[in-house]
Length: 193
Ligand SMILES: CCCCC/C=C\C/C=C\C/C=C\C/C=C\CCCC(=O)SCCNC(=O)CCNC(=O)[C@H](O)C(C)(C)COP(=O)(O)OP(=O)(O)OC[C@H]1O[C@@H](n2cnc3c(N)ncnc32)[C@H](O)[C@@H]1OP(=O)(O)O
Image (tube, rainbow, N blue to C red; front, side, top):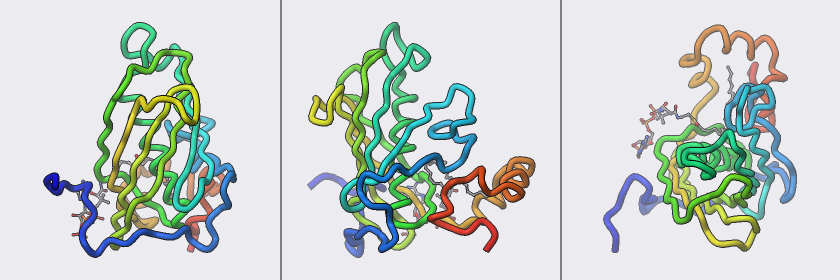
């Protein structure tokens, strides 16, 4: 057996079910914050990743690599691919109706990802223990059943709204509190409880 890491669910962890009000498979989840680099429509140069609900506690997304995403000539930058996976893994919170932030994220790059190719990302939750959410994702090249190019594993930690209110820069926090339409995750929590 391999050595336990922070990505190894503890013995008390359970395999979660989708929240009763979770969106049904195929539902587009939309951006969670308009200025999010991963999904926001208003973020300059952002990835604008679109996620949708999958079966069980899972989400799917497609990410097409453009010339703006290069690390080496004609190839995707690894850190940028990790960002797309962070975003997809984060969207699992919708399926559990919780708001969670990344605590730990590991990425394995199995194959180079050329500019112009599309990664078919499938992310799913393996286990939950209290506030800790253990998830995995695979990215397949150019088809839902294509070869695996990227794999990721993550520990997300559920947080309350105060995580963002207390830690975010005041001007952006105030802007969102004054205009809740800027965050589209109302399904998961109330902005003004
Ligand atoms: C103004 C209104 C705004 C409203 C919000 C708007 C938008 C956001 C909404 C929704 C977001 C939805 C989707 C997001 C989708 C994609 C975005 C990508 C996600 C990100 O890009 S997000 C940014 C990067 N992310 C961070 O910025 C986190 C910085 N960090 C912290 O803020 C703390 O570090 C925190 C909160 C993680 C924990 O802090 P804490 O004090 O709450 O809790 P504590 O430390 O007790 O940890 C509890 C248990 O987790 C274990 N644990 C914690 N961290 C671990 C680690 N790294 N490895 C192994 N185990 C770990 C402990 O060992 C303990 O385990 P145990 O319970 O067994 O003792």
